[in-house]
Image (tube, rainbow, N blue to C red; front, top):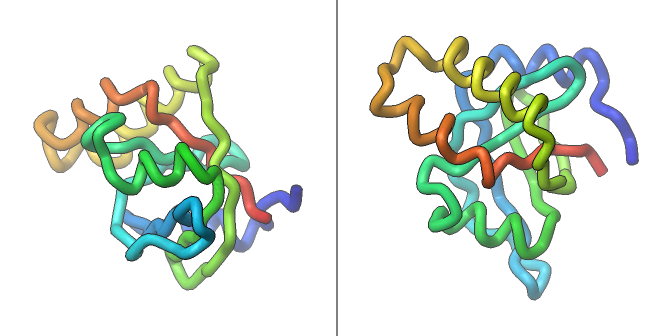
Length: 123
């Protein structure tokens, strides 16, 4: 497992969205979709706006591998499920802080989708 570099984290963190393309079971990538993400320390996290019904999330949850693109960074990643409540509390706060300007109608579904939290780990 290779950690994110400071430069990669800084470039990605400046963006509002990242494109995520999880790999299907047969190893081919899904079409990239733009999603919201947050940074917590040296880690990046994503959640599904549609909860466990989100197509990209179901694919990521099944394969645990994919590709992201954001802020000029293109990276293959591993998706790691996050169940730690303390981390999820910080992710809730990060989503509210970063995207609060869009209103509760957009932020609340991400805050309530804690069961879909995935950490993006470079590979």
